[in-house]
Length: 439
Image (tube, rainbow, N blue to C red; front, side, top):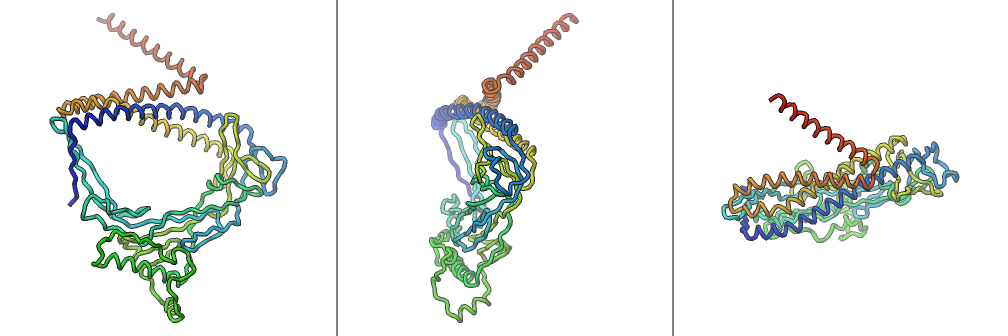
């Protein structure tokens, strides 16, 4: 049976919250307005930068040797990335010569979900009924079940060790004869699974420590089953020193031992009894790497290094795309990315503006909550008005920004809009005259 909590908020408290909501509404309106204005300027400046860069960029067929004549020029080239850096995850004692090394951790935990239903009552009070339900899920971090609302599900979670995701990146990566900056190294993609190889002793240490945790959590004498181990198993810390000395006879036995709580499958290290039937407390650690490969770059040559292009308006550009991509396609993709980001920020700005208006005018609805049916009717009207006002306000800000940042285009569009309005008004008058004459 689902667990429920009921909360009642009085009429005075609701009005007090609405008054505070007015201030929050103005802040959201201001924030949305600033975002809309800034976004239009960002979009225009980015477009100008891309057009300027595209006009001066040159394609270079071969970058295997540094060419002094290219110094200071914005180039496009296709070559292979290379590195000699060895990356190591000291926690698990694995490493590889790679551009990136990533560790992703997942925990099998009870996760709390909730759904709240609100009901207005005559007199202005509000009743909120929150229903909590719980599901076993893989989660990117341990879930503190002590904070669960349902007492029956509290203290059910535990983990064998608390380890976070980790990413390692090579510092020295070359593109042909040129060294890449960090921002371009981060852009290199194309992950591949990393083959794992652990010694029998290391697996045995993990198995011993993890088994202790699972057995302690299953023991009936344990009161707090949500406890998280304070210490990471010694082998997981990459410590070569052993917590306990292993005799020669034991070492020989380890090689034949079946590890019940540690499983290695490709690039996945699994702590738990059965990877195909996960239980609370199980943990999965996945290792991936990015290897050198073919890439396409647009950047400025500076000696034996590549750096960002700085446009006249101060905007910068340096792009790396995995694989062989032409200069035209790379610039086209940048224009598409700019347009996509512009629309995303416009919708965010519109949402903030509409929400701001709702916060400002929300008190009109709450004043009528003494009669819920009246508040519902007024609420529909206020909601519609806020949406219309929000859209109109957003379009006005965007139009003003266009006038400021793109006066020529904005002038043409404004003239077209005025002409359309005049045409529609004139057509409406003509239709009315025609109706009168027919009568």
